Image (cartoon, rainbow, N blue to C red):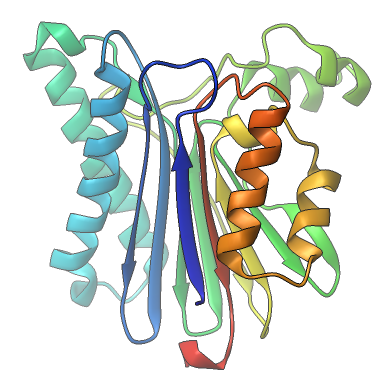
Length: 244
């Protein structure tokens, strides 16, 4: 199996506000993960609308685009508008929002886009690194030199994000394009994973000679053993000849 996804409620939450889905075609893979926020069930609604809307937009419009980044940005805009309108029209969902991270694999090219602090990682022959950018208060402080990496690890407001889907009428995603080689691994995840495990610990699991399914389950189990303070959602994709 080249793609595997898993979601887990964690140890402390009553509702799983994460959502994910994958849209797979002959030489195209769209992987989407979202982490919702809001009042009672609102986060669950926001993340679900976002994931469904992005995949819906791809299915209906992908043939009309020559530039995949334009397709991705328009899909995110479409999903953001859906969440924003629902939050305005339904008082139960006022101020709901969600993160989003997606990977679009077209032949040997990887397109990553994100809003918020759900992450994308790439594991290849050069190592393991985050390829998305956190839209969070702690990352802003780190980038402008206000705090050090050591202080960032202990920062008490690590969960405050500075950008989210559905909060405003427009939203801007960060994106990156990367060339893929056989056996490269892409990881998408919500912060339920990265708040419990370090990048080094995640890389260690991904390096093990086990299936994608077992890697996902092991990462979830380790996160829950550490406390499982949030919902945990993971998608793993392994690139290979089957995609060509």
